[in-house]
Length: 325
Image (cartoon, rainbow, N blue to C red; front, side, top):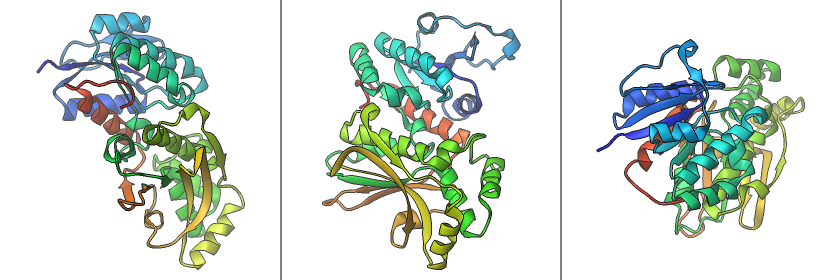
């Protein structure tokens, strides 16, 4: 079988972990080029990535895709305002050219869901977003494929590992600042944890899953969040004293279409969201006829996001459909 040619855009922690994962796990993929911030490098089959000082200036994405005859564009750029226009433009160009896009970057998917879908339809290409929806937690595949015909009407989730870890620490009496610092030291939390503590990251992941599950336009979903702040430690201790666990729960339901809410809730057994520990994540899909379906595990890390991205690329190889499905 002809190896799948991959262009990787972004060579930070997730991009570097993706390259290592391809080398370790999948001999049918070839990374033909890597695009950094301002430079890029073309790779011969089986060659190592050279020092960045030897990379050439960044070409237009059209040229890189054409020179490599890329089958897949993998995006591991940060979800930052500075990278937004680039990541969107690269994805649109790749999709229209017939290359599939596998992205761990969230920003353009959130803002231009329908535009990306239209570009995929035009090029007969596909989009996969597992790395953007919870690292190694396979919620995207569950929503996109496994729940078809199950009649899912709602979901509740703790998809942010940082908030779960911090809330558990607060329940033990640890101060908020110390809990966040510990999460950062362990590689669970980002240098800027504001999206985690505000509930924004949890809402983002549930928005993306709702788009896959119910075909909602992700860019138009309304969001309400309750943050983890200075009032939360006392609340976490009070909840723990009752034998419960405080959780930042993101939810969406067909009863309230196009809305995602994140609330701090006291969770009790047998609720699966009460049993997750530390940075572990979980999502519960409410299927009235089939019964609740829970996906749990998949701790947060660059490697987890890279492995989810590799899984998407590997599953695309040798098959063909269009769009997000």
